[in-house]
Amino acid sequence: MKTKNIFKRTVLVLVLVVLSSCSKEFLEEPQNTAGLSESVVFSDRSVVQSFVSGMYDRYKGQWDDDLTDGVNNSNVDTGGLYAMYFARTIKGNDLIQAPSWFLFDYAHENRGATFRRVDFTWKFNYEFINYANVLIRGVENSSDLDDATKREFIAVGKAIRAFHYFQLALEFAPNYNNDRSVARIPVYTEPATGSSEGNPPSPLSDVYNLILTDLKEAIPDLREERLGKSYINKAVANGILARVLLVTQDDWALASSSARAAYGGNAASAVVSTNWGGGFDDLSDQDWLWGHFQDGSNETNFFWLSPHAMTDHLTLSYQATYINTHFRDRFSNTDKRNLFFDIYQSATPYREFITTKFAFTFASDVPLMRKSEMVLIDAEAQYHLGNEDGARQLLFALQSDRDPNAVISTNTGQALLDEILIERRKELYGELGVEWFDAKRYRLPIVRDPEHRVPLTVPADSELFYLNILQSEIDANPNMDDSINN
Image 1 (cartoon, rainbow, N blue to C red):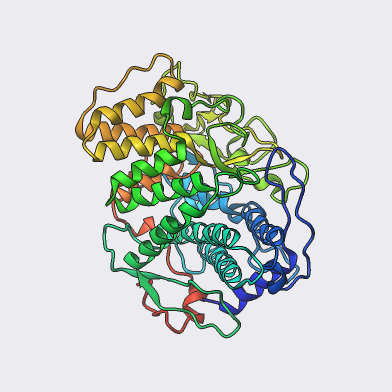
Image 2: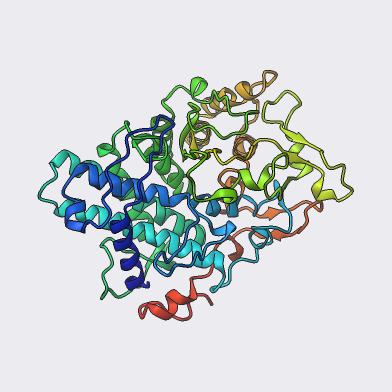
């Protein structure tokens, strides 16, 4: 791990403390803390909050791994958290990417140890892990903060750290249940310093144990109240835990209870959304638990924001993402999610359909987690707990809201699970890369239809489901075996 560089970047954020208001109701911004030392930052609640706000603001910008060199080293497909999610989204069969940004992700040609996808995904997540470690350590060591404030911000730090280790585990390791002993990801729970040496990779079981421990310790101390939906609160942390448990598949009861804590327990009311047909760009929608807020005038991503800037063909943007005709055929004519149109009348098969799910403007908010996803996680958990009727009822709560002509499923066994997974794809397409995520955790292949611009098959458990370890990490970390990518 290039600990010196990460230490410098963390200090830079402590100095800059990027300020942001992440609510539609423009809250009073924290006071400018530029130039304050770490000891001062962690001496006052409002300044600690500014530090946390700066972290969340950095999620959505034109991400650059070195803010000190005066050069923006970011690209459209490595812009921020949204770029990592969209790279997963176009690896499946449902969406088709034109030869534009994200074309290497679409073609599964992005694994190389020196490629920018690998570089971005590794550095982005480890940088936020280090921010979280700085936050936890700084709050723990503060003699000025009261105990309640300490517990709250330590919980925030642990939730953020868990979230990013989860992303690293998804991106740089095989499926958890293939081999829990595989060691590819170094673990750090203390801030890096100028003299820090990189740790050896930890077994995947240890990485997931830290993720689960962090989340279980954080959730009781997190608040429901927050400055805006760009911030992680108790519900969002429960949602992250539910996602993690979809991968470990060893505690379906907790997956269910965590999902219910996230969506509120009433599936019929949780899934209601006004975003369908309205551009899917409004963070205030009650269905949204977590997202990027865009104020429309003072943002750093400009035309970079995915999925909106990639999928919207009716506005000046990249107009790069199309819909597989076979995926389009899964939606009934009365489904409000059926927002597919043949606007080009093209003879090129992959350009037949586009979607108007996402409308791009500079004020387009970006979904990161929704209650509807949590309802579907609950349905999947109920299936694995042997409660198929409960699973069908939860599934129907979503289906009946999206389609007035929907009828409750009569499927059982594997057919019911398959229906839940298909519903996840229909509900969440373009948002999270759920098709790739589900294929990886269930050890399924990705088989593309011939209509794709790049038709291919990714076999189950293929190495294409994870990235190589960054070469500069191997070179800089004496505890990283050179053969790790072999």
